[in-house]
Image (cartoon, rainbow, N blue to C red; front, top):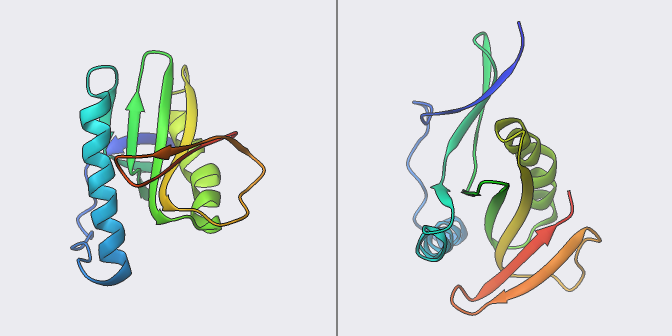
Length: 145
């Protein structure tokens, strides 16, 4: 049986989001950025906030949740939001989420973007652009897939 990639409802086993500590601060920052994305881009893109995707077959599905997608006629911006940049999050964006988004939008260019509040001194080589976000007090990092 061929594998499929498709949007879906959240799986029933998903629990409540943390509201305290570092994870809670990360969730709060993510909500703030999502609100800004919606306000800024709702007129020019389909803005999908926190969409769930499943990949696999009826016998075994793997579930993933994108932080946000900005879907245009020719391009899709795949957005990962983090309080602080972490190398493993960047790897997951490029190696897990990007291939899924490319399957969902095979006729459009998918551009991976990480939005984070703080950055390390050294950053990966595959960064195309880095922009400071005045309203979200963070940075937008566009990556070469």
